[in-house]
Image 1: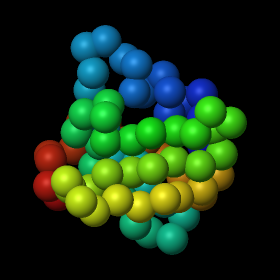
Image 2: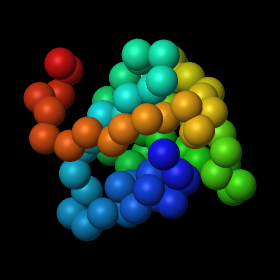
Image 3: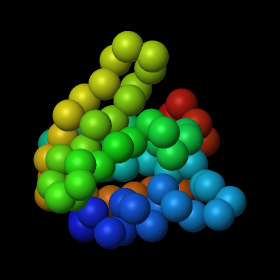
Image 4: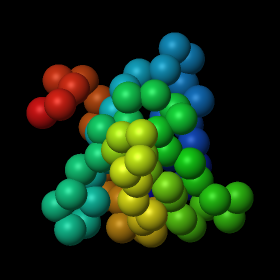
Length: 73
């Protein structure tokens, strides 16, 4: 996965929620563009899971963007 692919998903108009799958099996629901922030260089992402819970992940470990899932599944 590349930072440009993630940026494109975040900037789509209208925004479509998506799920990011990680190489280790984790998945993150991105329900709003504010839920994922890429660093300027595009190597690291901050992914918000709730108001005070977030993960800092390496973008290269993101394997898939999935659209069309039921939120919360």
